[in-house]
Length: 367
Image 1 (cartoon, rainbow, N blue to C red):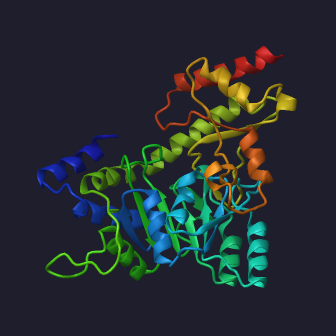
Image 2: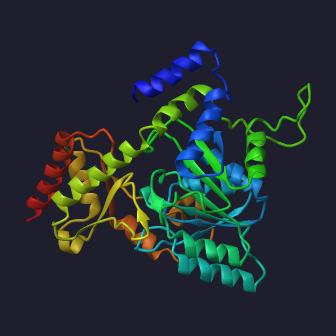
Image 3: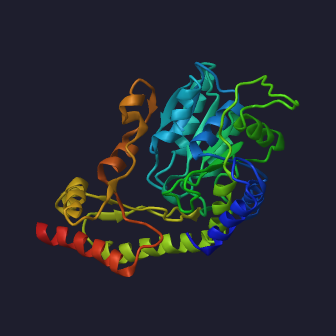
């Protein structure tokens, strides 16, 4: 946080405009569109809320199937279950760690042959890196299946000089406390279609009809963002490029210091875009390094350095065990070998050095 955010919050207090909606919300939506190139935006309470609204807007109902990236956080798929629909998980590729375009096309073709196309596809842009959007969007368009882009982790990234999240039918972003910019909690839904975004705002404010009394013809949700948090978001938007630069620097420092170690490979940057390096991730080949990812994680933990495995694939999660997975070996391998290093935008050289020294000590102690 900085003085920028504080000034906007003070303005909300001075004007006594605290509750959901308000001038900061309107300005946040407008400024977000200006920054990302999105056409229309609705600020909501979380990225999860944005995904839920997207599924509602696309008419996803009980029994429908929704194709979804498997290597991601559970929040991507939970709203599918909210709607009574069935997720079908699609494996990753090694190029970007995101959804495999060829696998998606094959899955859509197979579903088309039996007349059972999914109601939507949710594509995740993982760890600050865009998926290969063009072939994925082309496959969706070929079968007339709308694409939802989950860009919760990828604000500030590029795909062929355009912002991930602005290609599909609907895009969603998150401003949760751990994201590259934050409103403490919050999200954004974007679309080229102004009617969809207007309907999202309507549903997010309890679907209150235009009437002098409280009247409701549809079920709605309490999903709108508060004016105070939108003020924080306006300040955070102004420093997005600085946050991206800081995260990319973290990655470069780690890579230069650890990339030479046998068996260590850092998450690649696909040649079709720029990755924010929201998190610095690497994989460990235990046969070459001399120990597995979990050994490294536990050794660093003894020095009060928190690292984490990469996302456990959703098709391996107990809560989604009953649902179909198409492929899965790549995501399972990345989970088995993948490790996320401390990646905060405010890490100091001393803190980065402490992580690096501890990591090098693990290697030295093995050899």
